[in-house]
Image (cartoon, rainbow, N blue to C red; front, side):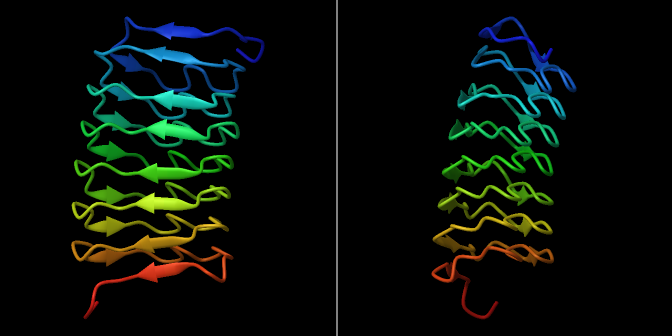
Length: 173
């Protein structure tokens, strides 16, 4: 699929399967209102600049948007309950992310090496933040860990180089 350079219309799918468009050059994608899952590695290394996910989507698979270097914006709907590990790993142009209240954990290296990530909104529904979740997010300005978080993995901010990073954690944590 590396030579695929046209908009892809997925308006009839309920699931985007494993590696469906990995390594392709698709410039945009139309996702239908009945889409429920995006499989692992589905859009790995694609050139998508933005993605609007439908309100029917329940899960984003592991590595689903990994190394989508042109991805600057993604809208994650409230219907999402699971975001797989490494789902946005290496999305070096992603600027901000808002995690919906329907998600309860941020998995292993979900946003690893999102080097343009400036802001993250973590809802109070989050109870776990996995290993390396924000590792190598070098310009992350501030992040607040809600009181609901009871488990934080290792190296969550390991090489978040920004000396001005403001990390707010709940009192008595």
